[in-house]
Length: 307
Image 1: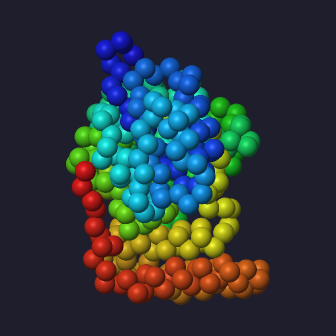
Image 2: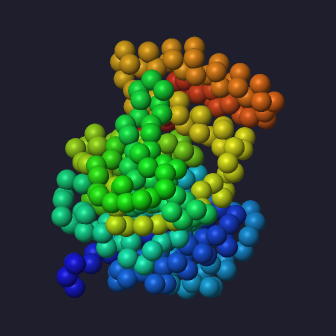
């Protein structure tokens, strides 16, 4: 990059009850070599932890306190509306970054204006050479599931090449503000999970491409907030999966998808929770399905907020 080609990057991160984790993320920026960055932390109505300490310890950041917990999409949308950057980077607070991770992401956009979103190579923080993200497949219209191409694999250089991906990763997702102005903000109906997939689908529907950028690297401490298999996670991820299907699958495919979910997926998952004795997870799954039944005609399901 030349000296004149460093557009402002707005880094937006959500804090909820974990200021010490968020502080580690901010601290990892001290050696970042990209010279034009603003960091915006949106506190999603935390109920514990000293959020004010973040501003005290890192006076350079912008701290926004939401009066209510708006979830991942809603919290990030608050930050996006306040961001001044040409590029918006949504970055989980449970990540840490390498010093030179921003340059390849910005350069990717500058070299190809048809790109609407990018994500870096993401490693699991606790196993630094184990990959979490190197691109992801298209979501099945019927199962509403996808496959991460590098997920759980050890990095031996097999993903050291930029690659078109069907979606970016919510832990670290950069989007030009001009694209957001065109497609709108993330759908807040999700609260947690699938919102970045939905956003990616809308970005691709608008004619843009999405890329995995191999020479940009971050480390992710996955599931610090929600746990590996908590009732909270089971509820929101299954609630969101059905919402995604309702928003993005159309016509006869939607009918087939409903049949698959009701006759195969839902009964199978409920049975597995019962067989494992996970009654709390069984109840969370029932609650997720029930929410979608209760909101069968809720027009908010299809709302996309504007910038």
